[in-house]
Image 1 (cartoon, rainbow, N blue to C red):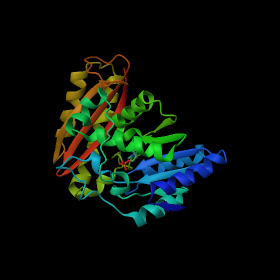
Image 2: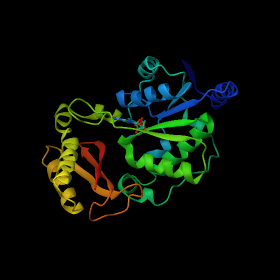
Image 3: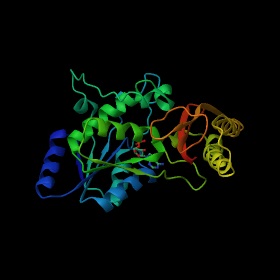
Image 4: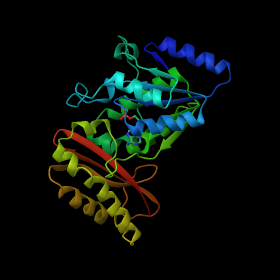
Amino acid sequence: MQLLTEIARVRQLVNENRRRGKSIGFVPTMGYLHDGHLELMRQARQQCDVVIISIFVNPLQFGPSEDFNRYPRDLERDLKLAATVPVDAVFHPQAAEMYPPGFSTHVDVAGLTGCLCGRSRPGHFRGVATVVTKLFNIVQPDRAYFGQKDAQQVLVIRRLVEDLNLPLEIVTVPTVREADGLAMSSRNVYLSPQERAAAPVIYQSLLAAREAVRQGEKNVARLAEMVQRQISSAPGARIDYCEIRSLPHLEEITHLAGPALLAVAVRFGQTRLIDNIVLEG
Ligand code: AMP
């Protein structure tokens, strides 16, 4: 497994493999890897000849009051985990390699980014869309793998790939969860033992909503209120947003009539967790 820190070295590796007719799978991450990340890599391993991952905590997608500085980082551990998949190369650039002085071009995906995490985290998806576009141009993958855990992110990236005619396929991988249902996240390490014990309420409330739909509830306001009530009852939980929106355009809806995304963001202390579930209307 190669560790590459320079864009030119990645291009070299990609060119060699392209010349030999090899397909390339790509998994972008911010590191502090867990089984959710590894599942993306395993799928890439099964479907592509060469697997490249990136580990880059992208400053552009963090707001000024967010957790960029304290975001967990452990490259040694990440390299060991990636080697178990195994992956062929890890691209781990410094911020200056990605954003040299004078950098001034950004990618904005309108519409989809005005709600949910886009509303709570202004500029977040601009940072994501910009870095992902750059990474796609550097790695030139045939397929790139993203987690359903970040449902709005996948929709934004699918949109930008279509709008900018990028020649690759986006593969969405289902959310990987802890045994008690908590969605795996690098940020789970921030949780105190009490917060960690309470956090599974998030997924429990999503499952309860799905069950209510199964029993015939179609009213979006009632479903959202049910979820909010259940989450708010957990000690220390503060809801950032809890919304049900249409798929794939994330439009406001009042009644379920087709697939919809139930998405939540919940704070426990300083830690902001997100999760979602698709409701079949
Ligand atoms: P991150 O390092 O948080 O930027 O995540 C990198 C990729 O892993 C993104 O496509 C995420 O959606 C995906 N991912 C993160 N957590 C999970 C999870 N629990 N299950 C599946 N995919 C995940």
